Image (cartoon, rainbow, N blue to C red):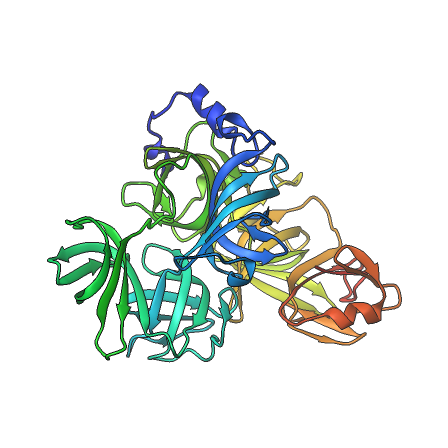
Length: 484
């Protein structure tokens, strides 16, 4: 599919030089102190500095803009927020410095009446007619919001990534009772100074909304076709526009050069893809992680792309499939499949426990073993046997586990599970992916890379935090457990 999009925009030598700067390379955008000046768009994964797209950004001297207000610090940010960071990524590719951090929610308002559809771990609804999807396990809920507590009429703030049909929420917050302002974004299709109409990202028409005589209008005289944010006041019970401003739908400015984006692949309707509204092109020097991704790109996958802007198109130096939230290395106990990629792999977790993992056409199959006789770096479910060991990256929806990638290994190795803690029994066991793993006298405990005793370790455990266990003899007992 992507081959049709490989336009000759730049000669290969220029591509190799420019794209080599991505991911902490250097090149024309290098800073005097080393590393590369980069614009990064992605969701916040953690703090202690700010972690975005796998990079730890130092925020000692950062300038913040949060919901159009300056003067904030890390305390006004939260995990799951989609942000834009301007700064530098160091040569190690893992650390950097944030000069500016910008956050603006994607949508704010009440859940529309009749729109709430509760599913098995995934719930959908609309806000001011814009479609939203939330996941019980991957969406962050804060400030009083919860997955179970979603209800029609509830006023919430949403941050997330558009997948071509809806905003896939990475964060949901409950709106303050004292806040009568709603926010919605779209492209202006009607405007006469007294009313404004938008077409939203999901193609739905919103409006016309009446414009207050005192409204702030940070837009041209003729805003038709402009992507804008409307701020709507509901204090009188009738929605009225009190502010209109032009908006960067993709959070990328015209003068951005080197860019790193994380988001959901959207089919651009022309045999190609976009991420966060940014169309991109691959080239002969584009790197794929894993390599099998090149032949398996499909709409709906979450990826990270790095490259340089050529006009309004991103020329991709690297594209990487985002890892699942759960990683397991284990022996295969059974395989059932309907074709080469669609089926179920059952993993042996020891002590009679197992985990069923669903695969489909979006799953990446990698083969680094000696069993890869054709040398293509991949395999099919037809080739997998119950004597193989695999490394699997998973996502979870309700009680179902889906394989983002499956990698076949050469030989049996200890069972390794890295996943959120679902339950624990002090000084006795932890539960991950529905399996109970017990400790014993020889268990090694690590907390933030420091070895500690069992009492100290269990005093720090919190349900929902991620732990990593190793079971060397495949019996469901733990030889080593780590907690970050």
